[in-house]
Structures are given as C-alpha cells and as structure tokens.
Amino acid sequence: MSDLFDPIRLGAIDAPNRVLMAPLTRGRADRAAVPTAIMADYYAQRASAGLIISEATGISRQGLGWPFAPGLWNDEQVAGWQPVTAAVHAAGGRIVAQLWHMGRQVHSSVTGEQPVSASATQTKGHIHTYEGRQPSEPARALDLAELPGIIESYARAAENAMKAGFDGVQIHAANGYLIDQFLRDGANHRTDAYGGSVDNRIRLLSEVTERVVSAIGADRTGVRLSPNGDSQGVDDSNPEALFVPAAARLSELGIAFLELREPGPDGTFGRTDVPKLSPAIRTAFAGPLVVNSDYVTREQAQAVLDAGTADAVSFGRTFIANPDLPARLRSGAPLAEGNMATWYSQGPEGYSDYPALEDQPA
Image 1 (cartoon, rainbow, N blue to C red):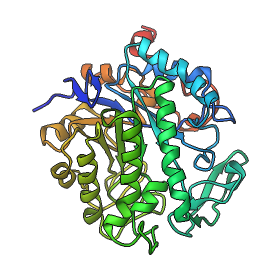
Image 2: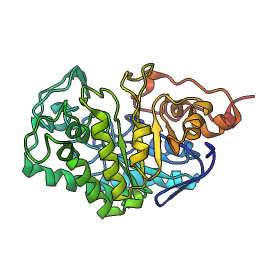
Image 3: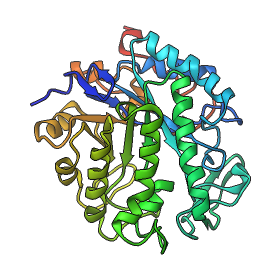
Image 4: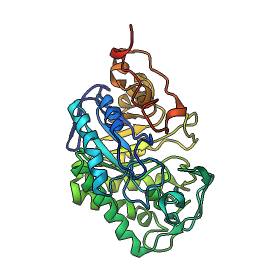
C-alpha cells in the first residue's frame, strides 16, 4: 500500500511524491502562442508537485484555438518555454508538456481555418476567442491523406518539447478534443479505417502514441483519457468496451503513465452518472495509473491509493491558489480559494501572486 507522499517512478521520471499537478489552461502566452516570463514564475512556484503536467499546448495553429494558450510548433515557442522549464528544474521540480489538438473545439477567427474533426460535426454552445465567446462553427471531416500530417505534428511537438527542456510529454486524448473525437462514437461517424469498430476508433490514438514514442521514447510519453461521461459534447455509447482496449493498447506500448479524468455525479467542473472506469482500466494497464477530477483533500486522494485503483492523483484547480499544495496536504494546513475571474486573464493577478504558506504574513 502506497502513501500519497511516497516517491514513484513515472517512466524516466523520478517523482518525489504522488501529488501531481494536472494540466490547467491559464492563457498567459502571447498571441503568437509564445510563453511569457510570468509563466516561469508560476510553474516554478509549483515545483514541489511530484510532477507538473503543463497546460495544454498546441501542436499546430490548426489545433490551437484557445486565446493566449502556448504552442510547441516553432523555434520561437521552444525558446519561450526554455526559461520555464529551467525555472522548474532550478526549483527542484519535474515538468512534462501536454500536447493538444483541439479538433472541432476551435473558432476560425483564431486558427484562420474551418475546424476539423473525425467527422463533419459541430460542438455545442460557444467557443472562446480573442473577441470573446462566439457561436461554434461546423467542423469538416479530416481526409485520410491529412492524418499522417497530424501524427507528424504530434511527433514534432514532442521533439520540440525535449528541446525546450521538458522531461517528457503527455498526449492529450481527453476532454472532447481531437483524439477523443476519433475515439468516441458520438463524434466519430467515419466508415473508413478510423471509424466504426473499437479497433478502428483507437487507431489514431495508437498511431500518435507510437510516433511520439519513436520520437522521444516510451519512458517519456504519457497519455490522458476521459473515459466516463460527456466531454464538451463528445460521448460514447459503450465507454468500457472502448476505453479498456484503448488502455490495453497503451500498456503494450509501455508508456510512462496514463492519467484519467473522471468526474462524478457531484463534480464541480463537469458531472456525470456514468461510473468511473478506473477499476476496469487498472486491470488492463500495467503502468502507473493517475486519476484526476475533484480531488481536494489528502484523505480523498489516499483512499484511491489504498483501494489500489491508482498509483498517483493529479490535482487541478486546487493548485491554482495553493502553489505549495503538497506541503499543505501533508501538514493539514487550510487551502486557499482561487479567484475564477482571473483564471484566463493576462497578467500575474490570480496567477503567480498566490503566496505559499511560508510567505504569508504572521
């Protein structure tokens, strides 16, 4: 039985504890998707996490539609990330880059082109843009001939992540974004080799992961899935029949870790009555398994480790206002509350100005 503060090896990464920092979109890059100086402060402040999983980071302009989110598809972005990773390492931390293609969850005013997806579908609601929230747009289905280029974009971004000083990458295959749109039959209506059967719908995830593994190594490659319930309008009619084989395939590839975002019926940022699949996935995936979504207290996190369901827990929004979260969880110190109004604003307010316990006035 493992304790939350026991070390864990995640592929090539030796993590000093099992309190991981989940990816958190914060919108502090510039309009060219280049990281800014305050991002080094923010991430270094949170270096006591067992592992930091960076905010979702675009693999291409086509795939990155979130205003002021960072990218990893060109040399300027690589150079922008280098002070960030250096600051984390100087503070004793470890950090991987989450690689992101948003698929249909973008707007042409940001990307400069029509959204793309597994099939010609449209996400519900509105999309964040530089001009504010705008109605979503219909996506076009990616042609077979385009998929090798998408796969290469992931590999190039992974190689750029290593040039930027990251310790590895996490492939974002969750939350209703491109790979998730291929995985789940609610968004994937294809009749070719990437649609229909479970094996076909897993194909893009498998090929992207294989290519990233070939570029930087399996021991520096992680994956994130969201197997239970709707994610931004993307859902599946039989999630266990899909995600257990997907996890088994990732296990065959020997990836460093698998993270699962699993909201519950009382979730604070998305909720579902679909049962969590981590127990079934645990039987199919031999590597380190990380669970995520609405974990706040030490007791909540320790319970899933005690049950053997997971090997580590990633904490998301709790890390926003608590840069020293592992120390607070260990000591039982009170947790600070974040200001949601500043989550996606530009500048240090509500970003790098939350004090650690030792920096607070007596």
